[in-house]
Image (tube, rainbow, N blue to C red; front, side, top):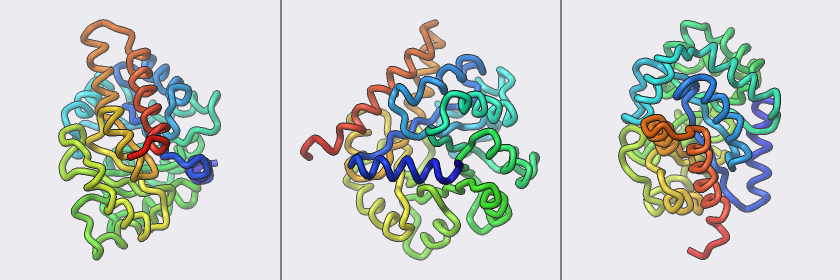
Length: 275
């Protein structure tokens, strides 16, 4: 499936006239068993696409919530190999929901691009976001992903001007991830009015759906972004639920999936409600 799974999901949602809800979770957070339960429950809770972060010791694009999630996962022994194993287990019951891995270059270099792309495809991964790999350095990875029908999904940002944009979207497939704010995850809030013209510009230049992430924490904010983007990505708000549930000794899985359901409902209904 791989690339085809992403394309099929966005085509189906376009036909429905709504944006996708993309949920981000950290593999192994707060522990591998609980993370597996959360991952399994995401589609029924309303996730149309799932981003799975693989924990890394120096997640430079992340704000404190996802940094802490990576630390919790690493402390419980989660690895990139464990992340692929968790996705393979998810695929035993779900062959339709696209899964995007999101992380950093070092573990991929250690694994080897060709071997990693092959193993990721075998596990049921559909695409990859590598936050710290610039387009100018990405051809070797892109070749490996193309050979295994995996999408390389790149980030565009508020500082990506018209000169830079063609470089960013070259060899991008599946969708483009538009970072709605300058800075790291989970700190600033996205503004739909400010984001809208950038989304239209990136969509026109790439011919691909545009997902908006960073700075989206509430159903209200998710619904507003869903009116102007092809997908809405929420991550920090979900890993915050993990942390809060752990601190309060509450049901982690239930709390996270409840948050997903409220965000997904807002995204689904956004275009039915007059602006």
